[in-house]
Length: 125
Image 1: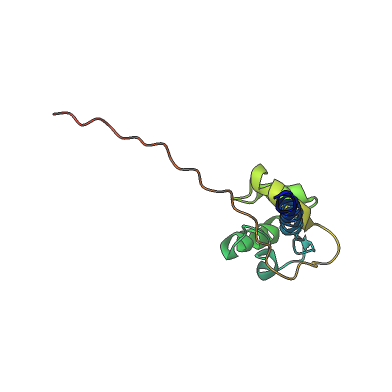
Image 2: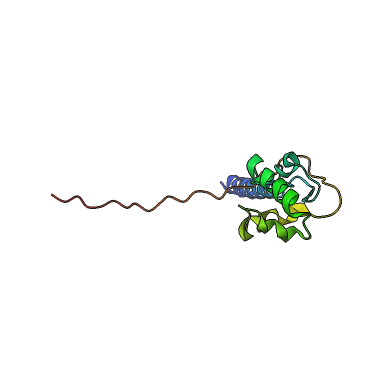
């Protein structure tokens, strides 16, 4: 009886350590490394940014053509559809000098959806 209890405890400790190691490995998976130069990237390269599709990328290119080069990355917020919140998500992938080095689409994790509160109305009779 005593040996089986020790065996169960050791098995639980091993499973706990292995589970936390697997969870840490998944959490630490590296995002695609690289940056996109706002001044030289074409629409295809800009669409590699997280949550930036073809239309938004084209708006960046059109803005750059109309207003000239970006002086700083935060100037992106002047483009329609790019506010402070979106800029904060993209800032680590943006530059205004150097080469574009991002080579694959960056997938940003989505927040889990929260169920909407039920707005049921009592039925009147």
